[in-house]
Length: 133
View (spheres, rainbow, N blue to C red):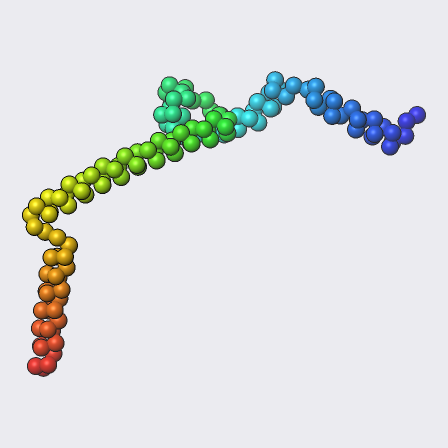
């Protein structure tokens, strides 16, 4: 009869071969382990907007982490592109309004001098009123 140590050694040598021969992709448990993310409403919209599914009703109850991560990456890139576009449009508007202000003769230097003039006037009237009391 085999001793306990020989039995463990024999099983230890066969176990890696047994694991390599087994096809995990066909097992129901492994498929459920892969598709283990349940998307919420916003993620369902992301899946539709990224082109993975046609409508929100077509999105299954569980999707894989890999699909969700790719979808999030696509949405992140799309949002970054939109933000870049809005920044460029905002810069164009600021350039246009600056040129219009320059045509009217307005400048930051003039505004600064006017502000200091008003500040000095209010400061001098404030100290003058304090001295009279």
